[in-house]
Length: 119
Image (tube, rainbow, N blue to C red; front, side):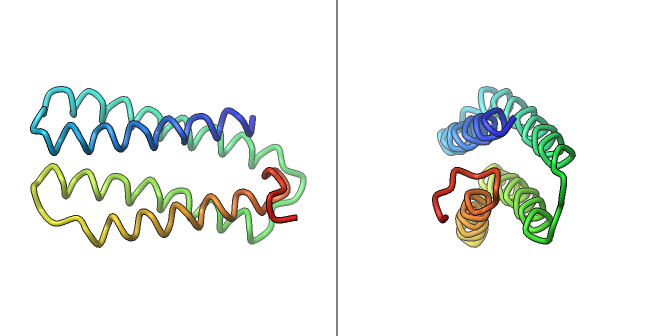
């Protein structure tokens, strides 16, 4: 299930940048459709994350932190897209997105179900 979770968030990141590019090029219809697909992937990310979490024998603070960071990452993605769609500056949300995303990935790799990068 870990691979399904990683695949869904990788596709979501790609879709996020595609939606951003479509919004900046004023292709509103294509951006709206792609944004809806991105939101479907948010749901898939959450569902696969819940399945992974339920399957754990022990949930500690690091897992709870990873869950919170993952939800914050999704939130920052939505905030960036909302600001770009409205034509407002999104620099702060871009910075927050990248920082939270990097922390989420690093914590995910550090956890026992990660890829043992930091072991």
